[in-house]
Amino acid sequence: MCDPVSMGVAMVATGGAGAAAQIVGDTARYNAEKGYQQNLVNQNREQIKNNRQVATEEYLNKVRLEQKAGMQEQDAIVEQRVDLSKQRRAAQASAKVSAAEGGVGGVSIDDLLLDFHRQESFAMGRILATQEWNKQQRQENIRSYGMEYKARANSISFYQPAPIRKPDYFGPALGVVNTGLQAFAPMAKK
Image (cartoon, rainbow, N blue to C red; front, side, top):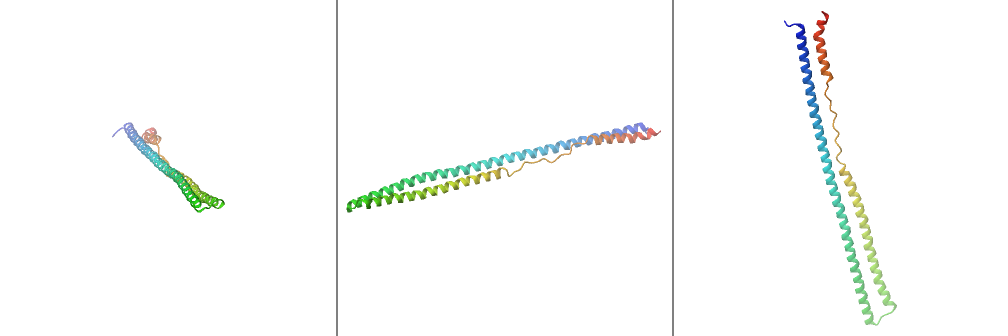
């Protein structure tokens, strides 16, 4: 049979080896979990970055299109004004020629010419009012696009890593001490 001291040393050595293996395993598990969690954080940040980039590009494109529509409408209104002015001048010229050929003049022809001006002003007023309404609608659209952008840009929340249990160094060490005490306790009684 083995002597009790050798047996006690063997028990403590076996307990120490088991404790060391447990600490190494716990440390490896901790590092692997920590790396996995960091990988999830990095992927989440990249996803948020890409999502915000797409949302920004979409917002800027919609705003650009609204502004382009406004400029096109401005150009169309300038053309309409020119066309209305041409029509008024043509109608006035025709009325003057007809009046001159008919021998009509004075107040009645002046009233007729003034009526052409009133009609042109009324038509321009309607065009400008419509332009103002369209401008206000475009501004509301741009505000709406801003809200869409904010909602989309913030639609992915930041990933919060789960807590990771750190390796326990004291538990296995205390287990070795306990094994040693159990192994050598019978010898202390003798």
